[in-house]
Amino acid sequence: MNTTLSNQQISFYQENGFLVIDQLLSRIELASWREAVDEAVKQQLDQAKTHNQSRGESYYKYVFIQCVNLWKKNEKIRHLALDPRLGKLATDLAGVSGMRLFHDHALIKEPWANPTNWHLDNPSDPYYTRRATMFWLTLDDATVQNGCLYFLPGTHQTSRFEPIGGLGREGVGQIFQEYPEWEQIEPYVAEMKAGSCAFINGMVAHAAGPNMTTKPRRAFAMLLMPEGETFKGKQSVLPDEYFNSLQVGDVLENNEHLPLLYSRSETA
Image (cartoon, rainbow, N blue to C red; front, side, top):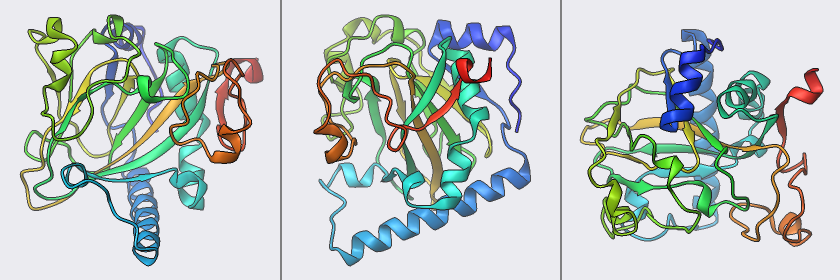
């Protein structure tokens, strides 16, 4: 795994709100991730079929297949996702003391999938911070044709914590109703080779195009929370028993549900 960061990369991330790292994984590592994600996604989809669970509203279900918290259900994913090297990369980029895993999710754009609208991540989370980040690993080449990522550079500096810019049928540019000043920002087109990754600030606007090919575009993402963050009242994907035990202002530090990937204090 390529875990070396330059000062220029850190500065780019902090200024723009994202960073693409080419060829993070070796070919052997990429093969392991593909095998683990394919296995875990199949398990979860098979279970959903068994329980007759729907993929949801008609437009959204054709944006991507999303399987959440695979690290809790698949030992191979757990081993790969809880790698402290990923936590250290995120910690160094965000300039925080450490990182916890909030949740993971496989994101698979099937052939002819709809675009993913411009949106922000952190306003939907149980904590508010401008230092959360998402690790987004592409398991297939991500191209303009099959739904690569797009970013609006620097928007993490002026975005607000109110949830807006959903993924539904309102339109890919819905976010500009709330942020008209962003309409003239030239998007960064993030085509990536398989095994590359992006770190994405939780407050930067990002989107993905449609998949206009006959093959799926697979990705695996992890939302990472700086250690020491406090509960703001939203449940999101927190389990009921943990959510019901929290009060606004509590520190989110339950290792069973929010495992600590890396901490400077523990390595000092």
